[in-house]
Image (cartoon, rainbow over all chains, first blue to last red; front, side, top):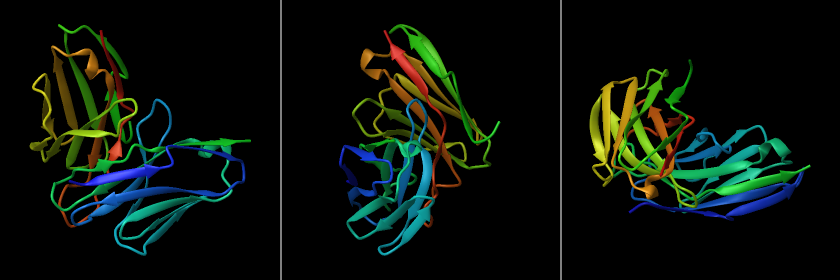
Length: 111
Length: 116
């Protein structure tokens, strides 16, 4: 069974203080690792897909990386508007369409 | 309308009521999904539809009944719910479900359901 564990559960940063979120996973035949951002009262917003170890993707202050066992979401010089819950999910090769999600990391950036 | 829309945004229902949630995607996708998001728990996949055919039913109680009349619309019919069914119900869509690609899923804003 696919499993995803995210850490930390919550992270408080000062504006401009860079940090990383972790997503550890076990999956049978990785077909994709996905990062989403979710604001309170809204649905998850797609950020990145990573397919293979060594792959990296960037978007503004966010950079996602992937190894065979975990993914990191690096946040460089965060701003208060980056405050949200960040979700990690994996898709294995055994179930069509199914994403297995972690519990998320609640990020708060203080001005 | 753009993206994935869901109605209603909020719903309060008694345990003996029957109600339906509606989802519509404007992305030209071929697959649609229902997820449940409860407090302190990860998103749980409930149902997957590909080209209007249900391909996965993730051990969901029969009081939840999905319907996909075409590739743009998805419904979740609710009856005889329990208080523990109170949650945020999210609809998503993707280009496909095949194993060859990542097929990112795009989510709607959700319906906040409260069962009293």
